Image (cartoon, rainbow, N blue to C red; front, top):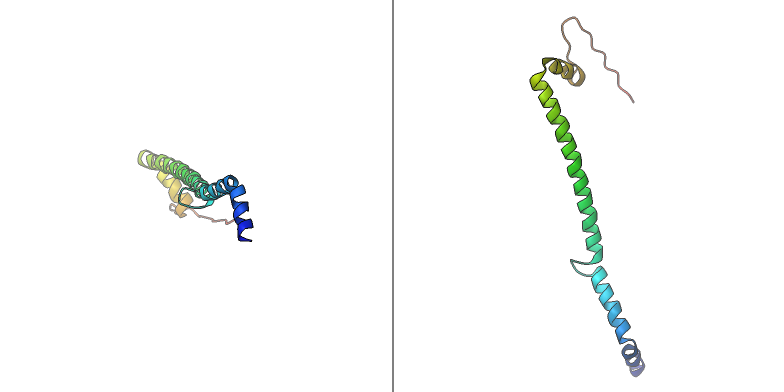
Amino acid sequence: MKDNLWHIILSYKYILALMIFVLAIGFIGEHSLVNRIAQKNKIMQLEHDINVQIEQFNKDKETLNRLKNDPEAVVQIAHERYYMKQAGEDVFVIEDE
């Protein structure tokens, strides 16, 4: 039995070595293919988050510039976001469900 197993191992030593190598590269260690794929997905998600934050920053920057330069924009934002009203106005809030 022992000699038979040893004979099989020696007969297929290159195939066994190749299989061990593929397993080591694919699944074992910090630099395995599985970890690389997970890291690539994480990088793509972070790049997407960066783009979303840049878009939000640009929108906020535009709003800030409008608030600094246009007094009418201050009144508009006060009405829309904070439901403030001027004297003699009524504010109706309609919520969608």
